[in-house]
Image 1 (tube, rainbow, N blue to C red):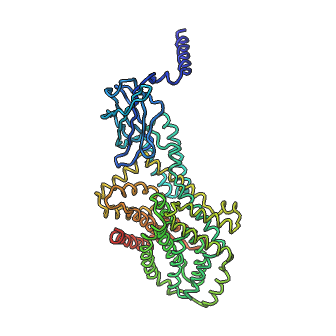
Image 2 (image 1 turned 180 degrees about the vertical axis):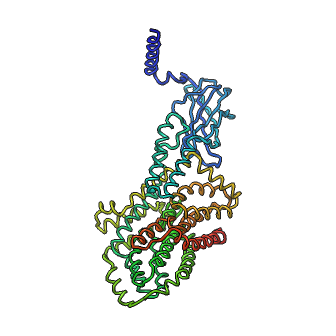
Length: 577
């Protein structure tokens, strides 16, 4: 019987609470004339960067005051709170304010030192103003360890090729969201990312730029222009294998500077293999120089390689910025690697059986013709205009992705291709999804403090020296990109380099961004898994019956990779600085 009474009492109280107005559960605002206190300020982290979504709590005489609307900081780290207090509470009352966010240590209650009377209105209300800013320190929460573990797992799955990289990134993003909206709902220390944070973390400028360039390349490759360029290379070399290797490297590098280097390799490899077999030489002796050239050429421009696209979008660097700062060193690296490969493969080239050059030229001319000259002219004009828009996008305040989307749309209209087929077959949707999910995984690490911890470590190791920071970023990026795909590594390094650019004296000119670009793009040459173009080249060579073992690739690639990074070191220290 007693249990029934307790249960009935519990149900009655619960019902009463449900039907009580919300204000009945909180401190009521005073009726009539009041003291109205407006508090404004900013919240930043130890590095001076604004912290968003920080909850602001206000205490008067030791009691927390109910605010009509929850007060939290904006993306710029600013907040403004308005309190309605009983008349004559101020200026003598003890007012304290506290800033708190799960991934940071609470500021604790800080007393407002200065409360300034501003005015009185006609209704007897007295207005006061105060300002209070906070610097929050990071807290190592369960969310920190979860985000760190997820990032490491995603990296491991990609590096060890245990699953497709898109699936690995998707799994990582899903884990972060699942934990945030299950455990994080009941305990804020497990909150890693909100859905809104995840969406804001995706750099749509990168996504749309990649998508638009895929469309442009997809239309251009229907003209047969890439295969035709390989045929022209053989025609210019006229049977001289040394000249042929050099010309193919130049053609590949230039193509990769303005188009996707993976697509360039996909289209030029079949012709290269056919030419090599005709000359009775191992196709690898031409493919290795080509893939090196594709990565070197792609490094020279904003649109040449995915890491550059990511860096340009994050750091707001223009197409012209990349050309001015990277093209010369890339040309130097191209010449040096050309000399290296011509020397390394000279025995193989000297064994070539040239045969009837004119017959071979005639065969290639018939086999690899321009299939649609009208479309090639249209595509060339559109590509030229698109590149011009890239060059002036800073003047127009236009994101590079807009220029690329304009070019892609115009080319689709002019070419009259089947848009459904184009979207289904020419756009690499797994790659775009990979980028989007990867941005979310890295955002989790950034939101919980891991990225900042790494940045602080690099800053401490460099001891504020710009020279040390340049060399650390360049060489760490090069080594890491040789071991894992350079895209996830670049995504992780973006916020780190952004912080170091502001923290290290002399780095404000952007030199650390060029160190990251050179290290990530050229370091990928070191192994067969370091860059997407390498993986494509090795795969197509194997399908043609020419297996390239991992260590054999590394034996050939390691020396020129180290040479180019040494050249970049001197360039950055002696020229860029």
